[in-house]
Structures are given as C-alpha cells and as structure tokens.
Image (cartoon, rainbow, N blue to C red):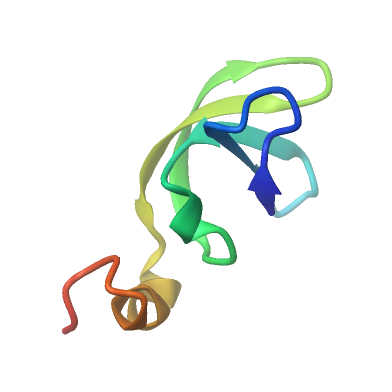
Length: 70
C-alpha cells in the first residue's frame, strides 16, 4: 500500500484477509504483490520481513528493473 505512518523506512501492505502487515523493503515495490515472513503478531497488525516479489508480479517487477527479466 505504501510507507508506514510511523516509520518512512517501513512499508505497509495487506494480507488476503485485510490485516495490515508492516515490513522493511525498498519503496519501489509499492504496488507489487510481495512475499513476506510473519515474525510478530500484534493486536492490530502483523510485523514481517520481506522475502521477495511474488511470482505473479515478476513480469511487472522486471519492467521496473527490480528483478532480472525471464
């Protein structure tokens, strides 16, 4: 979705069931589906670590020069 309100170095995304997920990643992944690993569960959000760009968005990521084109 975009940068965190509390820390501009973190991004906020949503899970399939609309829970907020906060993780550190490059801002140019905003708008792409990414894979994360949940590392902490909080009452109103989840903390995660960035794993990579989801397979369904590899071509869009390649167009942005975020991954090698296949």
